[in-house]
Image 1 (spheres, rainbow, N blue to C red):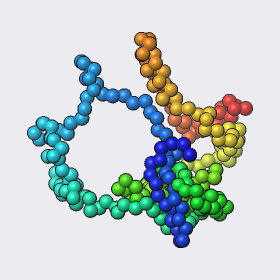
Image 2 (image 1 turned 90 degrees about the vertical axis):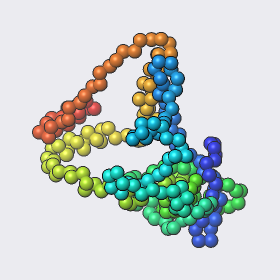
Image 3 (image 1 turned 45 degrees about the vertical axis):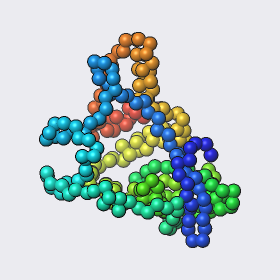
Image 4 (image 1 turned 45 degrees about the horizontal axis):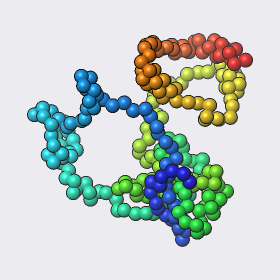
Length: 256
């Protein structure tokens, strides 16, 4: 598998152990800008300024504190924080297997590929079993002094390890305070027809990051010395409830 190995470990459950290498499954390449001093175009660097003395504080004079109430802090020493760091381990310990469909998208975070780290058997058998049973292994592991909860899944004959958010990190949909808005049979019929006409197989390569493309075009134009035209953003007014049916019919005509 291409790419740099981020970490090595062993999937473990029951009497089964499968050595693996972890690779990033997503690359986040973004155009980055640096903050410069406009006068001499020298890069700026960040300083930690004391709000009281109005002067920089060196690293050796810095400490960490937890605010218990406004202006009052509990100081925590580095040695005390070190005690909370999980013990180092190379095990991806599978706690249980659950139906893959029960892993709601809200729980999913970062995705990694797992490559076999040995020619010995076990990897392919695990891929086949997870695929056949359509289950995911809920597991835990420690990497770079952090503990993770994750889901071990198989797709396209490759194991994937996805970090999971904990249940208490999710915001309940009840917090949105959504209102019940009645929908007429006619609105539902037209809306369903519109969705049906726009339904197609998912082809991710059809979609591009337009913002990154515009940034790249801007940089290239400026590098050539071209003048940049400033465009006003187009604002769309929300559709009023009483105009929903009319808007749906107009949209349906556009895709007819």
